[in-house]
Image (tube, rainbow, N blue to C red; front, side, top):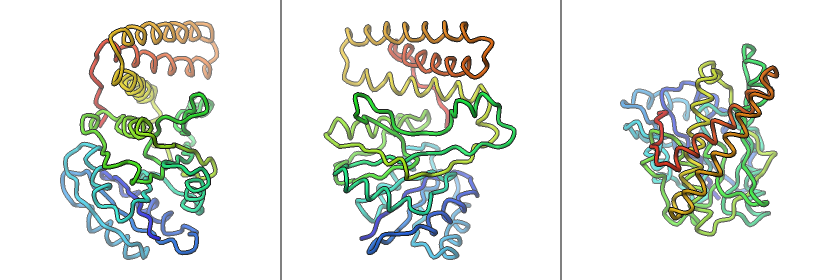
Length: 294
């Protein structure tokens, strides 16, 4: 059986390391791999580089030029060009562990799942602020609500596209982020079962520009907006008012904790980021448009 791995890229030569980690996979018997790379750059300048890498690494790879700077367009290009309904997604700055594919497939069949998320382990440079490492803001694992996963992320995921039933990533989120949160929540609402395989790890080196407080605050705010939007997609005016007051109370609590832990740098930043998340939820309940990050 062939499985397909989709990678969205934008001016990142480090995709070599991602492709090397895919080429090094220890695969189960009768499993083969194809790769689709969707390039979101305005030009196809990276095509020759990526296709030469595929030859060097003996990978079956298709390069797709998806030139408009909209991440949803690139993600949809991967879906349009997949060679298999068993579809993996990994980011172009991530490195898959050698048993990544095998572990994800095992979890898919063991749990009779439709989507499987793996762990994203952040690799921090030496100059990383201690409060960032202590809170590990850049690593990811899915959130369980009452022992159920309702949404997730595209960096390290396996999707049975048959269950997606023609679903695509919403272009309205293509410059803001949150398209993955929206996609998987829609799958959940369609009856898909979302599972987690903690041992299927991908590593993600964190660049310096993502270690700043400004970048993290902006990201947490956008995440709050995305969460708030999910609540509003099926909510009445009464639910919108309820969301406003719940998020406002959580924001007030988080800011109070910031004052309480103002001399503890690690805890202060934990509560600050939580507060900014709830600020994003709160302002989304008032109809604020998503901020653009792409």
